[in-house]
Length: 224
Image (cartoon, rainbow, N blue to C red):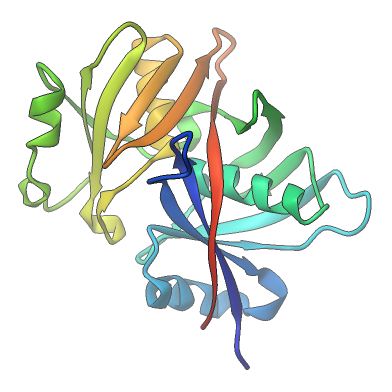
């Protein structure tokens, strides 16, 4: 049986360019023991499997997979799924993922989720002197771990790239979980330009939560 996969790009710029591709799949179509394999076959940095909510439901459950492993939480899949559900008329307030309940909302034309930093993987942070040093970093510099290369690019703004080879992601175009971690590290709200030009926004709260948000753009539908 053919499985329909909707693809959206998460954390695009204002013109709908760039962003990180996300595969979205109805969980009812794929048994739990086949989801990791499908994520590897699709090859997106993350694929999310969602239990489609019924009419008026305030929450729903989802699972997130990279090509190599399941994640308890990730930013670009939860932001992308929240937008996708709203576009289908099935908006929910909470996405239940293994890490915990992810609150989601829309503000200033962007889709946001709220997360605890310790839900995200640990990243080795590599501060650089300027944006040019970030851009010139070679992906083959890293053969293990989770690496976040960044530099200040103005007041409250940073330039970044992320590499996670053991997760099957040589380089990620836009990483919400890493945005949550760097926001906690710097203890301030940020505007992040990552990868080729993806745009991520965060809001730091002293109560232990970080909001991460951005724009989402529809890309295509494919069959797997």
